[in-house]
Length: 343
Image 1: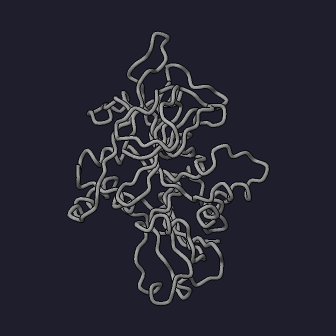
Image 2 (image 1 turned 90 degrees about the horizontal axis):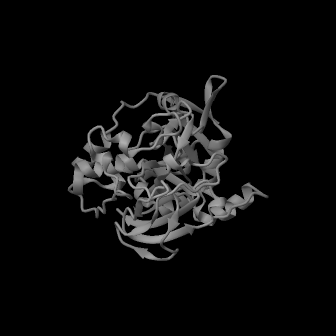
Image 3 (image 1 turned 45 degrees about the vertical axis):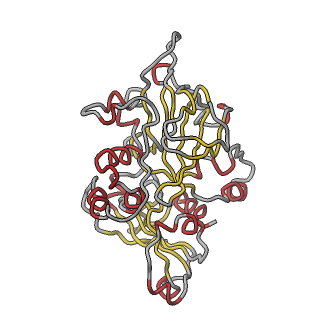
């Protein structure tokens, strides 16, 4: 599946701020996200080193979201937030709070079953989207699945639980915090089919089923725009790594997140035979365009349409595409991601 290269878009980290400011008059219901701990250094000039916990021997940037580890080749799915309080034994004692009002979707209290250790997932309704926040490495969990929580309500205590080979040291105890959309509600069935013999202890709330976006940029955007910040506009303005075409008229992703879809008069007239998806470097499908059969131009089930080569060089950690024989191809990881989206 060979795709063509595309010219990189201009580098504009805050491009979406302009978009949001222009469209701020639209009648969208904005529910702001709040910081999940008392650490507010993110909003202070030069406060990043007091907010983020980097990996051992690395700067604070390795505690951010994105392609921030192993020289850009390793993905970090969230923010690692530094503790402010410690108990008498030196363990982190910060309270962890719900970033927004919602429902506890999942609570794992068996730390040996996940890299996340003890972790919570909350489900929120924001800007017409079903958003999932994740809180990991907790030392204590104070809520249960199905429980309703309010923004700022205490849900746990910061810690360092995990099942990784190298334990999180006491001095690096932190909250790992994510914002996500759910990839596919049928994840458990898909995983059983594609990974026979492997364990899935967390059902649909397995980390592989979460497509994340940068909480830091969201929180800073809210701080700058206030009620003019809207999550849908933010997501629509992500930087494109590649575009793919999928020949399937029933795409769970668009059924779950129709706000990310663009209208296409041709598909509306002729009927939808598939979709064009724009993916970020981490694989987040932030734009959906329905396509008619006459537009797909191929009977291939999944097809790489184009690649932003500059973005791939700058942020390779998703490992979704590779250059072979003078052209671009989807990697096995890229194919697997699309298989999950389409299942």
